Every structure is written in C-alpha cells, then in structure tokens.
Length: 458
Image (cartoon, rainbow, N blue to C red; front, side, top):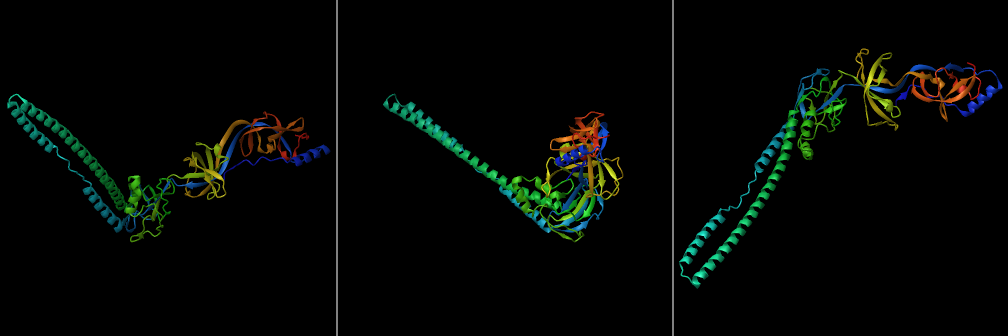
C-alpha cells in the first residue's frame, strides 16, 4: 500500500488539553518542549510513497505448437536474438499427418461443392406452339373455301374456340415450367451454400494445420535475451512483460472465423495456449508436448517501473509527475523517474485493499543502470503536488481534532485555536491555504502540550 510521507497530524485529546490548561493556570512556568515561530513562505512538495518493482520492456514465453521432438537448436541459453530470428526446430509426425488429412478433406469438399441441377427446356412448348399454329392455319384455309352458310360459320366458330383453348393451355404450361425452374434454382443455391459452409470448415482446418507445421520452426517473437524454459503459457499473446507467445499458431487461428475456431483447434490437437509443463532441459532430441513452454525472450533494453498506489492517493497521480526511486539492492542510489501511465482498473490485495498500478520511466540522464534487473523491488517517491512560495508552517505545527485541522496562534503571548485549510503536505512543511498570514506567530513544536488560553512565551 502506498503511504504519504508526512506523519499523521497529531490529534489532541480533550482530557489532555483540559489538563494542560489547568496546569498553566496553576503556575507561570511554561511546559518544556514548546516552541513558537513565524509563518513563512516556502516551497512545499507533497510526496506519495509506494512500493515498486522493476519491469522489463517486454517478455515473451515461446511454447510448442504441437507434440513434437526438438531436432535442432540455433541459439544457446543467454544469447541475445532479434525478432524473427530462428531459435529451434521441431518435428511432429502428428502435426504433418493432421495437415495431410485436412488437405484431403478439403479437396473432397471442393469436389462435392460443385452443384448443377438441370432445368426444364421450353423448346418443347415452342415446338407444340408451332405445330398447333400450322394446324390452325390449314383449318382456317379449309373453312374459307366453304360456301357461305351454316357449315362455314360452325367451322369458324370451332376454330376460334380451339385457338382460345390452346392459348390458355400455352400460358399455363409456360407458367408451370417457370415456377419449376425457379424452384430448381433455389434448390441449387441452397445446395451450393451448404457446400460452401462445409468448405469453410475444411479450409479452417487446413489453415490451422498449416500454421502448426510452419510453427515447428520456432522464431523469436521479440528482440531480447533467450532463457531456456520459462513461465507456463497463460493463453495470452503479449508484447508486454509476462506475455506468452505460442505465436505462429495463435496468429493463424485468429484468422479463422470465430464460429469455426474451436473446431480448427481440435483438428490440430489444441492451441499453444493450453496448460502444459515447462521444458527446463532444452536439447536436441528432447520430446515436448503441445503448449509446453520452451524458452523465454526478455527485452531489457529499457527497464520500467510499476508502483502500487493506494486508492486514497491515486487521485493526485497523473502522467508527467516526477519521482525518485530507491532500491533495496542498491542502498544509497537514487534514480529520477517520471509517471508515463496510470491504470484505470484497480487491483485488489489479499487483505481487501484497493491499489492502482502506476508505470514510470527512468530518466535516461540519471545514474548508471548497471546492476538493475527486472523484478528488483524499490520504493517510489512521487512528487504529486508542489506549491511554490506558499504560506506554510512546519508540519508539527498542525494538529487535527474533532473540529478539523488547526494550529495554535499566539497573540500577546496567549494561545488561541485557529482553524486552517491545508494545501500541499510535505514531510517538513505544510501549505496553509486559508487561516494564517505571513508573520503570524504559531506554536511550531509541542502543540500537544498547549491548550486554549494558555500563556506561551516565545
């Protein structure tokens, strides 16, 4: 928990004050330990003190993408590497077999995905129309050759009725064929969409399996120093401190549609973020399981600090606040730093307290950083508030009782309680925003021995 440097203001106990007042009335002797001084202007700096830990610029744990065996090592423990540099190679028959099976399934889905349904040909209807038209033409010609009379009239009437019946039948046939072809088209589109969905699944499996095979050549996710072994994978990829990087496979799986990702992971035997052991003895021929932490790459090119600030103090901390850092491992050394970010989300301690993580950057113009390592504990003293040439009194002059903050103002040798409003609270002096003026005389030492109306000799 972070604490402010100024001591808590002394609280006057009513019984003690009355006793002190009674004592002063019985004797003219002033109690020892009381000192009076003048209110002065001074620069007051309020400091928040908090525990801090040095952090690396970045750290990534590299894990195995599949059950495999180490076949080559391109680096040694403690070697510095660059991002993308080959670290080691693995061989995994299961990963290659999974890729082959996935490619075969995808090829089969591709072949079955070509759907073509035949449609009804309207040429038969057109041919029937032509035959009927020819017959109607011959009948009309024969009727025209008949003499005027009842027979010719009856023939022409029958011909007209036949033409009307044929036209109606023609329209019905064409409508029926159109509806049938439309239904066949919808059925074809449905079959094609089902085939596409199946193909999407098989492609997802191929992508994941290819990524698993490609990830058998393990490369450095960041630049830094290699340490064989490492933290067990946490399931998160991060360029920040503590990140896990079964990176190649995870990146490929991120490209797979979310609805198919779980299936793709199961087809390649799980992802690199699953719980697994740590490989501490990394050598050629070492068998590893999927997700096993193989090594860690740590970038210490720029060390940072993370401080835990109490919820009562974090409201005063902002980006750009300066600080001074002291280390347990290097007593006497002080490193200037500046706040670069303040977390919005709180951290709850085991005791139920709430703190916020504040990240600081060391001043490059400060002392040499030789000997500094990630994980070293430190104390951060943050200069959260500064009042230049402020009306101020020594910190011991201010006390707090049931009515609030106050000082003993001395007028004509008599102490009077004077309420005050505080500003910046430093370790040695406290800013008085309201209640006093420069030159006022106040009790600056032994305030707990003074009572209202007591005679005080400067």
